[in-house]
Image (tube, rainbow, N blue to C red; front, side, top):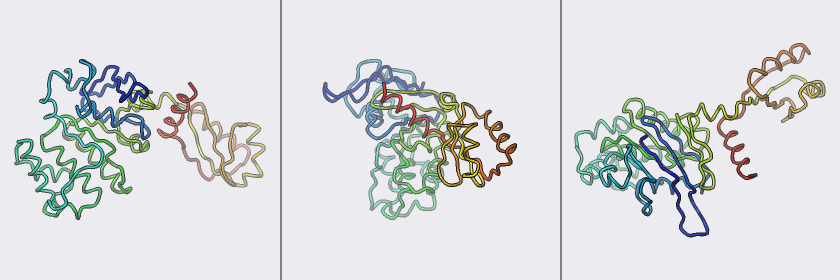
Length: 304
């Protein structure tokens, strides 16, 4: 495992435990989404993994298969990390930022153009960062994190504040880094739909407790039910008939129903029923996804 924690716990005082026995495993070359609402403990976990917050008991944190305390500070030469808002100097150009970081890390200065091209900023390398958009600043920060050719990239909420186009560009960039460079990416986020599109693995943190960990397929298997939104012609005329057969259906507006099935295999039976009753169907739209799973999971936790 690239990152592994064993029953990692943390608290600032005895009355409030921020993390409670969190054990995560991040496989090599995965994109691991560390998912949870604000205040769940995601940033605290990242700060502990990167050594920015306190000292831990031996063996609680391992990086690259070895206990963290046995390989400091060497381990961090293999990590690129961006925590919260990236810090840039407004008077420096993109290229000058890379030169500055390279001097601090005493790394090879021959990769500047390669890295800038990789993050899509080669055309803007001589422009001062104060003129960059937020998306360009995020990509420049990732370029700075890539200077030391890391095996692991740790990103804390990297799409915060980005517009839809910026979010798409960030997703494509991270997938490219993972696919072409083999970089393992650990990304914290509260944007559920984006994690679903980007990540191969996911850990869900809620109230300092790891509620789920596994592949995206594992998560989908937890909630295998299928929810659909159906647009029906003259719904009011047919509603009572549909409710007799499917009493749990919910009318969401004048023309649409929402139905939840135990599996997607039941949907054709429902469509056949409508067809046999000469009920016109104009649209069938899948509902749910990771957001629904996450909401269901946190509801379950609250009731425990």
